[in-house]
Image 1 (tube, rainbow, N blue to C red):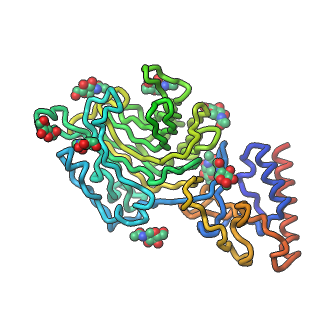
Image 2: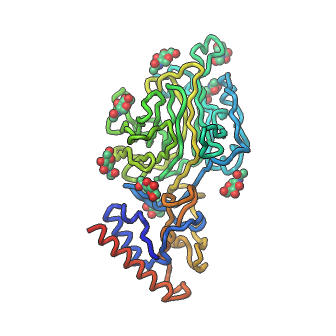
Image 3: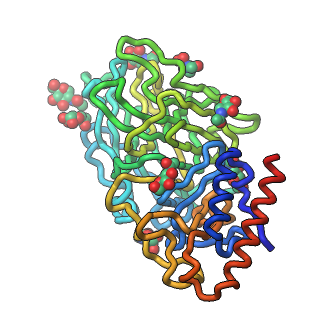
Length: 409
Ligand SMILES: *[C@@H]1O[C@H](CO)[C@@H](O)[C@H](O)[C@H]1NC(C)=O
Ligand SMILES: *[C@@H]1O[C@H](CO)[C@@H](O)[C@H](O)[C@H]1NC(C)=O
Ligand SMILES: *[C@@H]1O[C@H](CO)[C@@H](O)[C@H](O)[C@H]1NC(C)=O
Ligand SMILES: *[C@@H]1O[C@H](CO)[C@@H](O)[C@H](O)[C@H]1NC(C)=O
Ligand SMILES: *[C@@H]1O[C@H](CO)[C@@H](O)[C@H](O)[C@H]1NC(C)=O
Ligand SMILES: *[C@@H]1O[C@H](CO)[C@@H](O)[C@H](O)[C@H]1NC(C)=O
Ligand SMILES: *[C@@H]1O[C@H](CO)[C@@H](O)[C@H](O)[C@H]1NC(C)=O
Ligand SMILES: *[C@@H]1O[C@H](CO)[C@@H](O)[C@H](O)[C@H]1NC(C)=O
């Protein structure tokens, strides 16, 4: 039974046709219903949505089953101690974490945001694994990013300080990606939680950033999406840079939902639970960037003030990303075998880098584990079996072609 990957039907017409033509021309092998596989067998990942794209790398961070690391650190009342606090559990010392994420401890004393009215200090104590205390828990644990307004310790700290959380990717080499998190934001008003790409610059106009920002004082169905900068140094707003999106009925940032950003060469597109909520092509980031998640406030116009003692939390059950990278070390080993095919065939062509094993993280029944959409591009002379491979391949191509012709008429 042959099954067309569902993406092909939802891709823009020209791309669908192209993929189908390529599939036919290169004689797809063993196209069948998408079946679970693993990253070692994937040459690339095709995303769905209006800006579908191919990506070379995949990472999945699962925070749902980590009871051995769970524990809520107490607030660190002194700003210097907050910055210097150790990590909240061994989870954050493991190479699986440290090779990809860096927990921040910078503060806003450099005055980068001129309207800030509160000292903000990022603290490793605000990044922790927490036991799921929900009435009907859908996981054992999650990752929390906490931000908290704490009382001042002396007269020169009368406004207290804002303890904040930020994790940044170690790599600054992400260049186009689709990232998703199953997350919610809860807690007091006056904070921001965010997931974004970031490329800094000394000049505001040259910052490149695709943002998802939740302001805890906003209605629960309002999220701000922006290709920064959204304002100029002389205080003008750049309206085309931002969409203040109202979520479809029933969706709320305070409830668990999958938040997704697709950053492609032409636009930034955001989804909540599969619904496209914003797309911005104006000022789309172009150059290699970091990925950042945070929870913060500085008492400025954008964030508002948190009441002393209040806290807000971004809780994340899992984070998943498919991406291209400019880092040399992330270049995949192109010579790995795939599937049950002969070892002479690889998931990628070693000389051209062409992807021969196309996977998906969308169509999976097991979050985080990819499925194989199709495998193609093999050199027939390398394949044992001859006709046994060619006949089904050509038939598959014809079926795909017929289906697309019917669908695209
Ligand atoms: C990612 O890299 C692959 C291999 O170079 C390329 O084919 C693909 O178009 C890139 N994806 C995006 C979204 O640019
Ligand atoms: C804030 O950062 C500056 C510059 O890195 C540092 O000198 C200062 O000690 C920091 N203050 C706190 C409270 O962390
Ligand atoms: C690190 O990741 C690898 C691969 O997913 C896994 O097998 C290993 O158990 C992880 N280590 C820890 C300490 O979680
Ligand atoms: C308050 O000011 C004094 C003197 O300037 C300084 O030594 C101290 O570190 C400050 N306290 C805080 C919490 O910043
Ligand atoms: C989005 O909302 C912010 C905060 O309310 C506002 O300052 C900004 O002008 C809005 N932008 C657009 C494009 O609606
Ligand atoms: C992508 O595919 C999954 C699985 O079919 C679906 O749940 C999701 O809504 C799709 N997303 C988009 C943006 O089409
Ligand atoms: C972008 O979003 C608007 C609605 O905000 C929608 O009408 C349009 O089709 C979208 N464009 C693309 C390319 O997804
Ligand atoms: C936050 O509170 C400070 C006083 O602590 C005040 O100066 C500032 O204007 C307030 N910010 C907002 C956005 O209301």
